[in-house]
Length: 352
Image 1 (cartoon, one colour):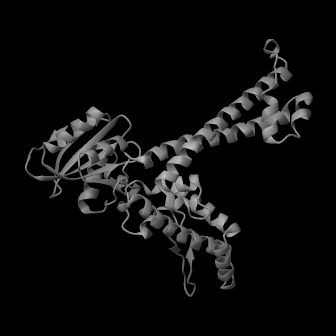
Image 2: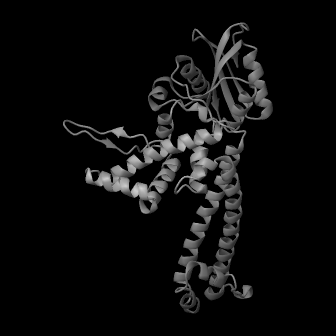
Image 3: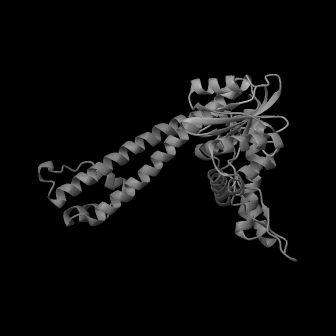
């Protein structure tokens, strides 16, 4: 740890975060490096880091890397302390090629990004209902993914099973197949027999699918209640269900006022169109950046409305006559849905 004490001056702090430790660097407003130190990534370590930095001067802003993962705990601690926290991206390859890579270098780079004004984004607040919904979405999505894998494995084992099992199960639907295999009774004393081993494998997969289905059902019920209570305006819009609303809510975060305009939210969701013009051609193209899960939610809403919402169908018909392709129409719809989502979230989150 290196330290140069001038307790009355204004300082900028940068933090390079990791799973077990955080490295902090302190700059004066003139850009001089004043101090550098490493602290445990624990509640005690967060307090020690803040006390250490406060002992060097008056903290103006703190730049933290990975505020949604490794730096989540530190970010919560700093926000509760009333400090101005800025979200900082990790140094790009050009910077690392020029300056090298180490925890002190990255912490100093975070502080300089804040000092120069290159980093201005505000981190999400993770102490409210939106964070609770995010955690439940993690559990839900992992259960859905695991169940999909289990269904695939059940199909594969059925396909290669001995004839007496194969012929009984192959024509069944996935749901009926699960009901059938959980009732199998393998002879566990003869597992060297492929038939008995197949029965055990099929029953195991069937029970796994049932357990995961129960998890998904229970999580869905909880999410239905939380999302409906949190964003009733958003959930009332056409083709916006619990899961799509939850994803858009998680992407936006509890503190929606961190977005200056609805265009900033559209950019985050990958719905802001990008220019793709050349010569006499003037056109826009799909944005492949931003939060891809939020972009997928917008896509699902757009596809649902194209199939069932009269206003959207009429819009698509008119735009098709104007020469737009289906992809262009979907891009336009996603941008409009992003705006609609932002306004609904403002109604639901900022009015409470």
